[in-house]
Image (cartoon, rainbow, N blue to C red; front, side, top):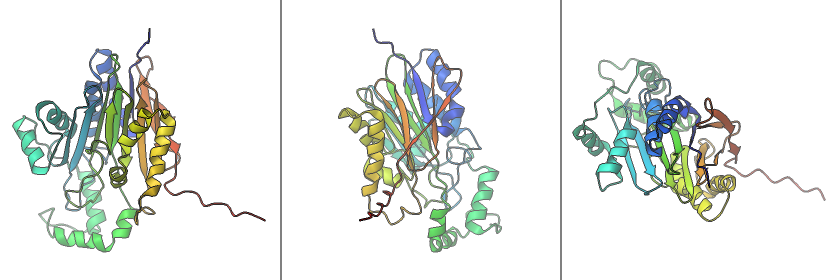
Length: 326
């Protein structure tokens, strides 16, 4: 008889949500319940400037949030993007999945949906994040009584210094993948996106197949980093698809990172970070990055707390070929 071992897997910043996820699993609840519980904790962490409350705002000083969930048993999915004023976009994404025939709602439509379903408005821009925004966009100059005054001019200032903005990138996302006692897999992703982004910019996090994908039959994957690359390469789906084709977890992760090398990308030298976590259908976990010395976290029910694992590394650029001495 095969014993199913429940497990929680996440990006490093998901650690704060693991106690909640483990408690959910110990109560016999679903993988989806556990994944969402973990992500909600990250969204509530004001010290994490890449997710939820305290996220770095867009160039106008507005915190815009993206999130998605996917149920590996049914392949149902829900997502929201460019949402302002709601603490837990992961909950809204799940509500989209469970109550509508749609997969994604964005902007004002997603906010109207959240309002009609009783989600409470909240201030997402913390004093610390506002200070980071002012320093980066205005050089610390006062903005007057209106935080968004002269916003167009602010953006044009950034455009003229686009290379520096890319160099000083602030990217952040949280990924959580859970397998429950029934063997069902669920994934959840949430982000405030690229710091100082153009308003309305959407990365991979809410895009099913790019930043998030789960299928009980093969496994699940989720991505962080520069989402534009994951969108173009369908990275989360690619990892699962490789496993579907019989490729082992570690090799599936590696192949997905190698796929990124085929992207023609003039910004790659400045913005060259992509990461992924993945779980196969048997609950084996792994992770990879284009950067070295990065890690992920995981925990089973019999572990006293989360443990760190080192991500494999596949640099975005292929190493230069050594010259041949003849």
